[in-house]
Amino acid sequence: MEELAIQWHPIVVASVMMILDIVTGFAGAAKNQTVESGKMREGLWHKAGFFGLIALAFIYEVAAVWMNFEADAVGLGVTIPELPAVSGACIFIVATEIVSVCENLCTLNPHIAALPVIKSIKPHDPAAPDLTVEVEEDHATGSEG
Image (cartoon, rainbow, N blue to C red; front, side, top):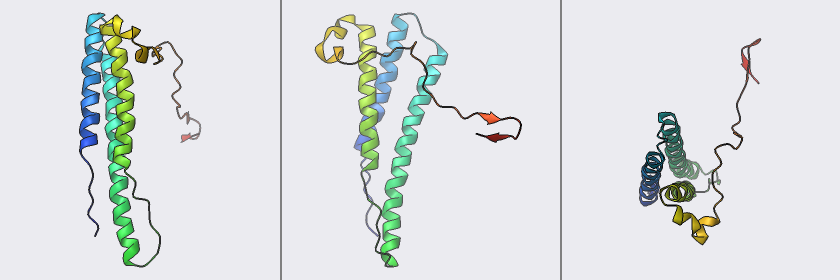
């Protein structure tokens, strides 16, 4: 069976960026005296979602290698693309965290907000509408829909 080589470096970089976001976010909230456990809990759930994304990508990579080995063994002649899914997920996470850390740094030091690169980042508007999609349960039938 082909050797599975998941790169751990992107996972470490993504984890460090998530920790940096937590630390700078907490520092900014402490500076503004707006530390709220609910916001911290929500942020930690977002980080848990990122780790879930990494786990899903890892499962895809393992499954692709295993299924390709099995398909080759029985001569099916089909393959599943063996994509660097973990690295792709980590790139997305790192990019997201870079933006968040930059926002947090602007809270800590308003002079950073004047930098040209930072000016190009649209600031997060907490008053913006929540675009989360929810599934409503039909109470009459007990089904979702």
